[in-house]
Length: 139
Image (cartoon, rainbow, N blue to C red):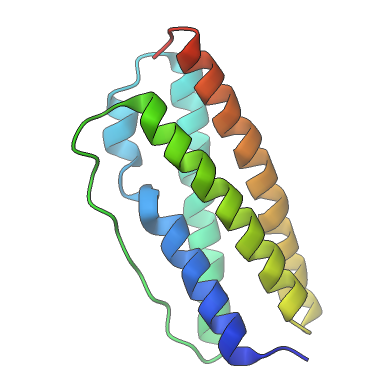
């Protein structure tokens, strides 16, 4: 049986993490000139918005209140630094979504959280590819 309070806390932590960069993707994307990197960043942004929507809906369905949070925009657009930070966030998101899946007894919610966790694995690979391209001098 799930501990509803702990699950809601984990979901809200996940929601804040998803939103921590969503608002900054347009600014970051405007600094990117390479079309391949730009496409990957757009994918990250679109999927992160879907994750945030799914989490907010789950929190509401469980009787909680979604807690939104935004980080200030980066003072300087150092793409490699931004994506190294993003890598840490993707790894934390994977951990939190996996924990949420393991905490819930609801098979539908579990499936949603497992799907998001799988997508976070894909995001880790995507961010790794972005960093590799930046290391090659692309931007």
